[in-house]
Length: 301
Image (cartoon, rainbow, N blue to C red; front, side, top):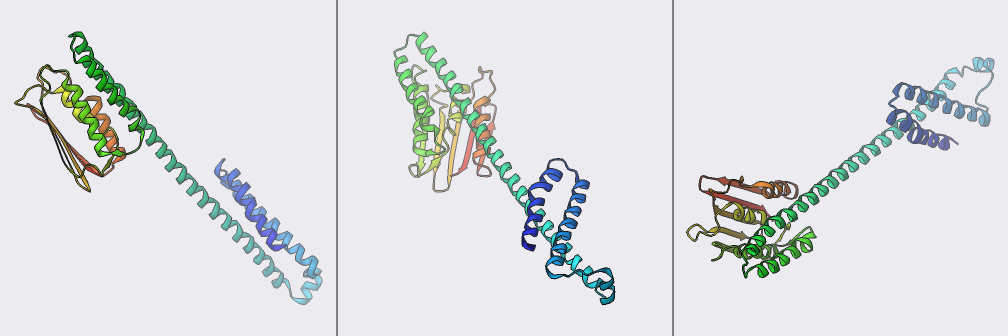
Protein backbone atom coordinates (compact mmCIF):
# COMPACT_ATOMS: atom_id res chain seq x y z
CA UNK A 1 0.00 0.00 0.00
CA UNK A 2 2.89 2.39 0.72
CA UNK A 3 4.17 2.00 -2.83
CA UNK A 4 0.71 2.68 -4.25
CA UNK A 5 0.40 5.84 -2.15
CA UNK A 6 3.85 7.05 -3.22
CA UNK A 7 3.02 6.44 -6.89
CA UNK A 8 -0.23 8.38 -6.39
CA UNK A 9 1.74 11.33 -4.97
CA UNK A 10 4.14 11.18 -7.90
CA UNK A 11 1.47 11.23 -10.62
CA UNK A 12 -0.88 13.70 -8.91
CA UNK A 13 1.98 16.19 -8.82
CA UNK A 14 3.33 15.23 -12.27
CA UNK A 15 0.07 15.19 -14.23
CA UNK A 16 -2.22 17.58 -12.30
CA UNK A 17 -0.61 20.07 -9.94
CA UNK A 18 2.40 21.15 -12.01
CA UNK A 19 0.50 21.51 -15.32
CA UNK A 20 -2.51 23.28 -13.75
CA UNK A 21 -0.86 25.49 -11.13
CA UNK A 22 2.69 26.03 -12.39
CA UNK A 23 2.87 25.76 -16.19
CA UNK A 24 -0.50 27.20 -17.20
CA UNK A 25 -1.45 29.71 -14.49
CA UNK A 26 1.82 30.40 -12.59
CA UNK A 27 -0.05 30.21 -9.28
CA UNK A 28 2.98 29.25 -7.24
CA UNK A 29 1.47 30.05 -3.83
CA UNK A 30 -1.52 27.82 -4.45
CA UNK A 31 0.84 25.13 -5.72
CA UNK A 32 2.85 25.17 -2.47
CA UNK A 33 -0.33 24.98 -0.41
CA UNK A 34 -1.67 22.13 -2.56
CA UNK A 35 1.57 20.16 -2.30
CA UNK A 36 1.65 20.64 1.47
CA UNK A 37 -1.92 19.43 1.84
CA UNK A 38 -1.22 16.49 -0.48
CA UNK A 39 1.79 15.41 1.58
CA UNK A 40 -0.08 15.74 4.89
CA UNK A 41 -3.13 13.93 3.54
CA UNK A 42 -1.10 11.03 2.14
CA UNK A 43 0.95 10.83 5.33
CA UNK A 44 -2.26 10.63 7.36
CA UNK A 45 -3.46 7.78 5.16
CA UNK A 46 -0.17 5.91 5.58
CA UNK A 47 -0.12 6.34 9.33
CA UNK A 48 -3.78 5.35 9.64
CA UNK A 49 -3.18 2.17 7.66
CA UNK A 50 -0.15 1.40 9.84
CA UNK A 51 -2.32 1.89 12.91
CA UNK A 52 -5.05 -0.36 11.56
CA UNK A 53 -2.78 -3.26 10.68
CA UNK A 54 -0.19 -3.11 13.43
CA UNK A 55 -2.16 -1.42 16.21
CA UNK A 56 0.69 1.07 16.21
CA UNK A 57 -1.39 3.86 17.72
CA UNK A 58 -2.62 3.30 21.25
CA UNK A 59 -4.62 5.61 23.44
CA UNK A 60 -3.00 8.82 24.60
CA UNK A 61 -2.74 7.40 28.12
CA UNK A 62 -1.05 4.24 26.88
CA UNK A 63 1.35 6.30 24.77
CA UNK A 64 2.17 8.51 27.74
CA UNK A 65 2.73 5.52 29.94
CA UNK A 66 4.92 3.76 27.44
CA UNK A 67 6.81 6.87 26.35
CA UNK A 68 6.14 6.30 22.66
CA UNK A 69 5.41 9.90 21.62
CA UNK A 70 8.86 10.24 20.11
CA UNK A 71 8.47 6.95 18.24
CA UNK A 72 5.16 8.10 16.72
CA UNK A 73 6.63 11.49 15.80
CA UNK A 74 9.57 9.81 14.06
CA UNK A 75 7.17 7.58 12.13
CA UNK A 76 5.11 10.58 10.95
CA UNK A 77 8.20 12.60 9.99
CA UNK A 78 9.61 9.64 8.08
CA UNK A 79 6.41 9.31 6.03
CA UNK A 80 6.37 13.07 5.36
CA UNK A 81 9.97 12.81 4.16
CA UNK A 82 9.14 9.90 1.82
CA UNK A 83 6.13 11.77 0.41
CA UNK A 84 8.26 14.88 -0.07
CA UNK A 85 10.88 12.83 -1.87
CA UNK A 86 8.33 11.65 -4.45
CA UNK A 87 7.08 15.22 -4.86
CA UNK A 88 10.62 16.45 -5.55
CA UNK A 89 11.35 13.52 -7.87
CA UNK A 90 8.17 14.03 -9.90
CA UNK A 91 8.83 17.78 -10.10
CA UNK A 92 12.39 17.32 -11.35
CA UNK A 93 11.34 14.74 -13.93
CA UNK A 94 8.42 16.91 -15.08
CA UNK A 95 10.54 20.06 -15.44
CA UNK A 96 13.33 18.14 -17.18
CA UNK A 97 10.83 16.53 -19.56
CA UNK A 98 9.25 19.90 -20.34
CA UNK A 99 12.65 21.52 -20.86
CA UNK A 100 13.79 18.84 -23.31
CA UNK A 101 10.41 18.96 -25.01
CA UNK A 102 10.66 22.73 -25.40
CA UNK A 103 14.21 22.43 -26.72
CA UNK A 104 13.10 19.84 -29.28
CA UNK A 105 10.13 21.97 -30.31
CA UNK A 106 12.38 25.01 -30.62
CA UNK A 107 14.87 23.11 -32.78
CA UNK A 108 12.04 21.82 -34.97
CA UNK A 109 10.64 25.33 -35.29
CA UNK A 110 14.04 26.72 -36.28
CA UNK A 111 14.52 23.91 -38.81
CA UNK A 112 11.06 24.44 -40.29
CA UNK A 113 11.64 28.19 -40.49
CA UNK A 114 14.97 27.59 -42.21
CA UNK A 115 13.40 25.19 -44.71
CA UNK A 116 10.60 27.64 -45.44
CA UNK A 117 13.08 30.46 -45.99
CA UNK A 118 15.18 28.29 -48.29
CA UNK A 119 12.11 27.34 -50.31
CA UNK A 120 11.18 31.00 -50.56
CA UNK A 121 14.68 31.97 -51.66
CA UNK A 122 14.76 29.20 -54.26
CA UNK A 123 11.32 30.20 -55.52
CA UNK A 124 12.67 33.72 -56.08
CA UNK A 125 15.42 32.43 -58.35
CA UNK A 126 13.16 30.90 -61.00
CA UNK A 127 11.05 34.01 -61.76
CA UNK A 128 14.13 36.23 -61.55
CA UNK A 129 16.02 34.09 -64.05
CA UNK A 130 12.98 33.55 -66.27
CA UNK A 131 12.26 37.28 -66.40
CA UNK A 132 15.79 38.06 -67.60
CA UNK A 133 15.83 35.20 -70.12
CA UNK A 134 12.47 36.13 -71.61
CA UNK A 135 13.72 39.68 -72.04
CA UNK A 136 16.65 38.32 -74.02
CA UNK A 137 14.44 36.07 -76.16
CA UNK A 138 12.05 38.97 -76.76
CA UNK A 139 14.99 41.01 -78.01
CA UNK A 140 15.94 38.22 -80.43
CA UNK A 141 12.36 37.84 -81.62
CA UNK A 142 12.03 41.59 -82.10
CA UNK A 143 15.11 41.49 -84.31
CA UNK A 144 13.63 38.48 -86.13
CA UNK A 145 16.82 36.62 -85.37
CA UNK A 146 17.30 33.03 -86.50
CA UNK A 147 18.65 32.34 -83.01
CA UNK A 148 15.24 32.73 -81.38
CA UNK A 149 14.29 29.06 -81.73
CA UNK A 150 17.67 27.94 -80.35
CA UNK A 151 17.26 30.33 -77.43
CA UNK A 152 13.82 28.93 -76.58
CA UNK A 153 15.15 25.36 -76.77
CA UNK A 154 18.12 26.21 -74.54
CA UNK A 155 15.83 27.97 -72.08
CA UNK A 156 13.59 24.90 -71.88
CA UNK A 157 16.63 22.73 -71.03
CA UNK A 158 17.67 25.16 -68.31
CA UNK A 159 14.18 25.37 -66.84
CA UNK A 160 13.96 21.57 -66.78
CA UNK A 161 17.03 21.51 -64.53
CA UNK A 162 15.74 24.34 -62.34
CA UNK A 163 12.28 22.85 -61.88
CA UNK A 164 13.03 19.13 -61.57
CA UNK A 165 16.66 18.28 -60.84
CA UNK A 166 17.27 21.18 -58.48
CA UNK A 167 14.51 19.99 -56.13
CA UNK A 168 17.04 17.68 -54.49
CA UNK A 169 18.99 19.01 -51.53
CA UNK A 170 22.25 18.19 -53.28
CA UNK A 171 23.30 17.71 -56.88
CA UNK A 172 26.57 16.68 -58.45
CA UNK A 173 28.95 19.54 -59.11
CA UNK A 174 29.26 18.40 -62.72
CA UNK A 175 25.50 18.88 -63.27
CA UNK A 176 25.61 22.32 -61.73
CA UNK A 177 28.48 23.26 -64.02
CA UNK A 178 26.57 21.92 -67.04
CA UNK A 179 23.69 24.14 -66.02
CA UNK A 180 26.02 27.17 -65.82
CA UNK A 181 27.44 26.33 -69.24
CA UNK A 182 23.93 26.05 -70.71
CA UNK A 183 23.16 29.46 -69.31
CA UNK A 184 26.31 30.88 -70.92
CA UNK A 185 25.32 29.37 -74.28
CA UNK A 186 21.90 30.96 -73.96
CA UNK A 187 23.46 34.34 -73.25
CA UNK A 188 25.79 34.06 -76.23
CA UNK A 189 22.76 33.94 -78.52
CA UNK A 190 22.01 37.54 -77.58
CA UNK A 191 25.03 38.81 -79.48
CA UNK A 192 25.65 38.74 -83.20
CA UNK A 193 29.22 37.49 -82.79
CA UNK A 194 28.59 35.66 -79.53
CA UNK A 195 29.64 36.66 -76.04
CA UNK A 196 33.25 36.93 -74.96
CA UNK A 197 33.59 34.35 -72.20
CA UNK A 198 36.61 32.52 -70.84
CA UNK A 199 35.40 29.47 -68.93
CA UNK A 200 37.89 27.17 -67.22
CA UNK A 201 37.44 24.28 -64.82
CA UNK A 202 40.02 22.13 -63.10
CA UNK A 203 40.22 19.54 -60.38
CA UNK A 204 37.96 16.79 -59.11
CA UNK A 205 34.60 17.81 -60.53
CA UNK A 206 32.73 14.54 -60.99
CA UNK A 207 32.83 13.25 -57.42
CA UNK A 208 31.68 16.40 -55.63
CA UNK A 209 28.24 17.44 -54.38
CA UNK A 210 26.85 20.95 -54.09
CA UNK A 211 23.62 22.74 -53.24
CA UNK A 212 21.79 23.39 -56.54
CA UNK A 213 21.54 26.87 -58.07
CA UNK A 214 24.28 28.27 -55.84
CA UNK A 215 26.67 29.37 -58.63
CA UNK A 216 24.38 30.69 -61.33
CA UNK A 217 23.59 34.06 -59.76
CA UNK A 218 27.22 35.18 -60.00
CA UNK A 219 27.32 34.36 -63.73
CA UNK A 220 23.90 35.89 -64.35
CA UNK A 221 25.02 39.06 -62.56
CA UNK A 222 28.06 39.34 -64.85
CA UNK A 223 25.96 39.13 -68.00
CA UNK A 224 23.26 41.44 -66.71
CA UNK A 225 25.48 44.27 -65.48
CA UNK A 226 28.75 43.75 -67.33
CA UNK A 227 30.09 44.02 -70.86
CA UNK A 228 29.82 40.57 -72.41
CA UNK A 229 30.86 41.15 -76.03
CA UNK A 230 34.29 42.76 -75.65
CA UNK A 231 37.00 40.26 -76.75
CA UNK A 232 39.61 42.34 -74.95
CA UNK A 233 37.70 42.14 -71.67
CA UNK A 234 35.91 38.78 -71.61
CA UNK A 235 33.85 37.53 -68.71
CA UNK A 236 36.21 35.19 -66.89
CA UNK A 237 34.69 32.24 -65.06
CA UNK A 238 37.00 29.89 -63.23
CA UNK A 239 36.18 26.74 -61.24
CA UNK A 240 38.73 24.74 -59.25
CA UNK A 241 37.65 21.82 -57.07
CA UNK A 242 39.40 19.30 -54.86
CA UNK A 243 38.22 16.93 -52.15
CA UNK A 244 37.62 19.75 -49.68
CA UNK A 245 37.38 23.16 -51.34
CA UNK A 246 35.57 24.62 -54.33
CA UNK A 247 37.02 27.85 -55.66
CA UNK A 248 34.66 29.73 -57.96
CA UNK A 249 35.30 33.17 -59.41
CA UNK A 250 33.63 35.46 -61.93
CA UNK A 251 35.25 38.64 -63.26
CA UNK A 252 33.57 41.04 -65.66
CA UNK A 253 34.13 44.53 -66.97
CA UNK A 254 31.45 46.91 -65.75
CA UNK A 255 29.02 48.48 -68.16
CA UNK A 256 29.09 52.23 -67.56
CA UNK A 257 25.74 52.62 -69.35
CA UNK A 258 24.00 50.16 -67.03
CA UNK A 259 22.63 52.21 -64.15
CA UNK A 260 21.35 49.21 -62.20
CA UNK A 261 23.33 48.46 -59.09
CA UNK A 262 25.66 45.49 -59.41
CA UNK A 263 24.41 42.58 -57.35
CA UNK A 264 20.68 42.93 -56.90
CA UNK A 265 18.18 40.24 -55.95
CA UNK A 266 20.22 37.33 -57.25
CA UNK A 267 23.38 37.90 -55.22
CA UNK A 268 21.52 38.87 -52.04
CA UNK A 269 19.52 35.68 -52.47
CA UNK A 270 22.52 33.42 -52.94
CA UNK A 271 24.41 34.99 -50.04
CA UNK A 272 21.49 34.28 -47.70
CA UNK A 273 21.31 30.69 -48.96
CA UNK A 274 25.04 30.33 -48.30
CA UNK A 275 24.51 31.56 -44.73
CA UNK A 276 21.79 28.97 -44.17
CA UNK A 277 23.30 25.99 -45.99
CA UNK A 278 27.04 26.52 -45.49
CA UNK A 279 27.36 28.26 -42.11
CA UNK A 280 31.06 28.86 -41.34
CA UNK A 281 31.89 26.84 -44.46
CA UNK A 282 32.15 29.53 -47.09
CA UNK A 283 33.96 32.75 -47.85
CA UNK A 284 32.50 35.24 -50.30
CA UNK A 285 34.65 38.11 -51.50
CA UNK A 286 33.13 40.83 -53.68
CA UNK A 287 35.38 43.48 -55.26
CA UNK A 288 33.59 46.36 -56.96
CA UNK A 289 36.24 48.55 -58.58
CA UNK A 290 35.76 51.43 -61.00
CA UNK A 291 36.13 49.19 -64.04
CA UNK A 292 35.60 45.58 -62.99
CA UNK A 293 33.37 43.53 -60.74
CA UNK A 294 34.79 40.38 -59.15
CA UNK A 295 32.92 37.66 -57.25
CA UNK A 296 35.04 35.03 -55.54
CA UNK A 297 33.53 32.14 -53.60
CA UNK A 298 35.45 29.63 -51.49
CA UNK A 299 33.20 26.75 -50.49
CA UNK A 300 33.90 23.88 -48.12
CA UNK A 301 32.36 20.91 -49.92
